Amino acid sequence: MHDILNFTLTKKSDVRILTNTNFINHKDNLVYKVALFIQQEYKVNSGVEIYLEKNIPIAAGLGGGSSDAAQTILGLNKVWNLDLSEDEMDKIARSFGSDINFFLHGGIAIGEGRGEKTTPLETHFDIDNIVLVNPGFSIASGFAYSQVSDYENFDHNFAKIINERDLRFCVNALQPGVEQAYPQIRDIVSKMESMGAYKSVLSGSGATVFGLCPDRKSARNIADYYSEKKYWHYIAKTTKKE
Image (tube, rainbow, N blue to C red):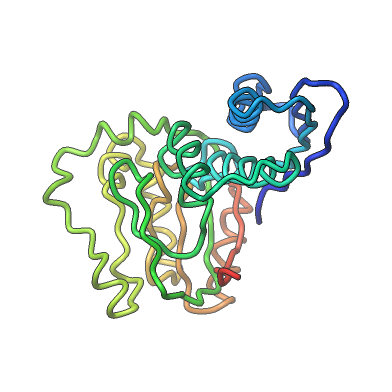
C-alpha cells in the first residue's frame, strides 16, 4: 500500500495538483507547497501537473504526507532536470517536515533531532503479516508530542531491536499519552494482542495501530474483526530497499 504520484510537464508555468480524493485542500497540500518552492527556488520556467493517488489514510500516523513530499522532491528533480545533490534535496526536505528526509532514502535508519537527521543502517527485517488498524479519527501530532512527560528517560530499546532482531522490543514514546487521551487506541492495542499479535504499537502519532502477527491466520482474524467494526484496516509486509 502506497500513494502514487505521476508528473507531467506543462507549457503553462503553474503547478497543478490532481487527486483521487475530495478530502485534500490542494493549496495547503504538502506536495503543492514543495513543488511551488522548488519551482521558485530554482527558477523553473515550465509548469507541472502532479496526479496524486492517495491510498494511505490522511493524518493517520503512517507518513503518507511526508512520503508524498519526498517523492515530489525526487520526481521534480528528474522531470525538471535539476540535478540536485543529496544535500540539496535533504535541505529542502528539512524545511518542510521532520521525517521527509527518511523517505528520501528509505530502508532502516536512526532518526535524530526532529527526525530530519537520519543515519542509514545496513540491516533489514523481513516481516510479514503486519496488521494496520485505524479507528477513523485523526490525532494532531502537536498534541501527541505534548503528552510526553519524560522523554529523556524513556527506554526506546533501539539497540535491542537491532542487535537481537527482536521486534517485541518495539515501543513508541507517544503511545502512553495518546492512550490516556484516546482510550480507543488502548483497546485496539489490547485486542490485537489478545487475538494473536505478538506486539501491537501505536504508529507515529496515531491514530493507526500496527500489530505484528506470527502468521497469516491471526492477521486475517484481526482484519476480519475490525472489518465488522467498520474500521479501516490493511495487512502489510516489509520490502527490502533496492
